[in-house]
Amino acid sequence: MTTAVIIVAAIILLATLLAFPEAKLGEKLMTVLSEGVPMVAFLVVFVTFMMTIICRYVLRFAIPWSYEVSILGYMYCMFFGSGIALKRDEHVVFSLLYDKLPPIGKLICKLVYNAVLVALIAIVFVPCVNSLMGSTMKTGILKMPYKVVFAPFLWMLFECAFRCLFYMKTSWKEYKQTRAGKAGAEVAEREGKEVAEA
Image (cartoon, helix red, strand yellow):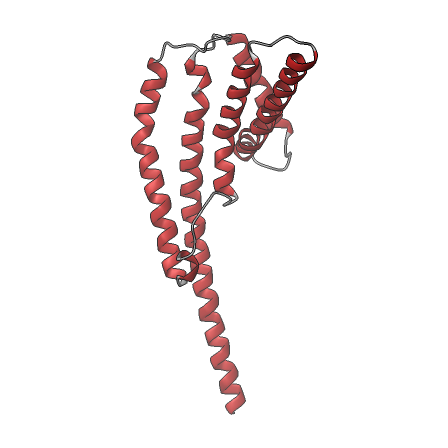
């Protein structure tokens, strides 16, 4: 099992170094973990699912580990891919009231929402780590320790907190640019009126 973890870590490191040559190392690592791992995990789920169907209905025998592999692949896809939904702002939102707010109201909503999310992640992080490290359970068929199975959950918490903090920073910058743009437009409008009057 340790060998498999080392091999997977080496593959991720290699993919990180080869992917996106113009990007910085941290950016490469985030991209590979956020986008590459979910793609591979979903591919594993699909291939396992197809193998299960073919073996069960065509070859007439069942693969005992296929269900567990599918569940693990789905979990890894979800845990590693959730941060990218935050990055692309593609998560589910109910924005009926938010869309009607002025820019300052939108900024306040973004800052409060992300700050609350970061605070909740900070509150649950240590208990999650303690629970994960204290677990001695293993999966039913593959006998993988829960420490390995649920380790990506910690990555999900870290990445979501990081993305929320980054989103707070960019929201503030966007608000300042919007305000500066409106102030610049008002000055240009006043100057245009003065020129027209003269």
